[in-house]
Image (cartoon, rainbow, N blue to C red; front, side):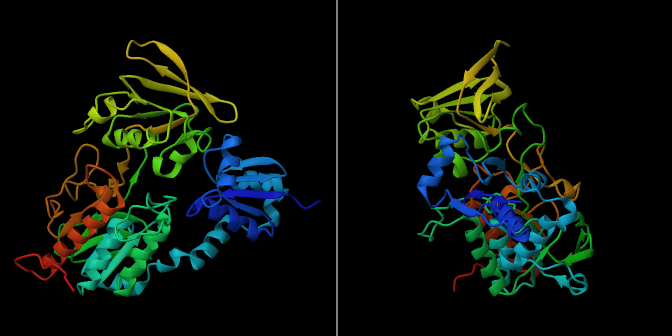
Length: 422
């Protein structure tokens, strides 16, 4: 069999790109990598092919979007018998060679400890909290079920984080935070929290391996998109359907896009996209949720706002070409667009495991006070686990600092917060 020609269009910090590359190495397949984040010519090549996301792998000219193990194997002529779960092996290899090496398995020693401070979630909120808590001499543990799958970790480029002058990927920034916390003595484990019990002075956190015990807990879980899909959404993800203007706005320079959503997040994303796109059509299917100001968008010449318009279907051939919408008069229309950014219902906090252990609002956000205290003594929440006016890494990191200082006050029974200066 002749050697296949394999070309991968990748982006810096893209976890799915890394999975594809690791799998190909595991299978002994040579490939050419074209990084669209670094080289504009590769970025332009993707746009010409109407591909608006990475990884995009071409095997003898046939395209595979994302990490689709079975499709990759089929095009490469690899049978299941010839390999031993390469995706799993590549993930193990990746874990050993990347930021995941910070995260260790849950051991018996960890289950025997009573930690001063445990943060559930290792994103910017959890990592920042770990820095402050560990530096404040609290015995600190961070639990995260998927360290490289959070919102910050999959962000391709960060250029506005205070004090970081160079551009870097979200994963690079997050790894710096985690390594700093580790330098101060924080421990990191990979694990899924199944349930919690905050009723006693010593909090109990159930994971598959057993029970982790803590004097204080910080709920710093991320948020996830709703599971319901629009017809055509899954088919065109990466081919015109996107969920992040930070990642993909540049692909739509001078193009027409639709933004669909009814939250502050959707409004903010539409404003960001208006700086790139020829026209942004903002569809607001229901009443706006929360205290949202539309005045700036209403005065933006290249933003068109459609209240009570619903997205019914996304259609096209190789990429998004049109959308079917239902107007406020219940009339069906077809619009030509180049891309669709979806924020339907906004991101939902992954707080279901909490059940009734702390007070949450109707959408699952944990209710906190100014010091991020929850309804349970010694338990705090921040980042995407609480309702914030805008989702940004720097806000989550600030939450982490506040929560850690509040936890230090609780653990050491101080009358006041003790800030860290030097």
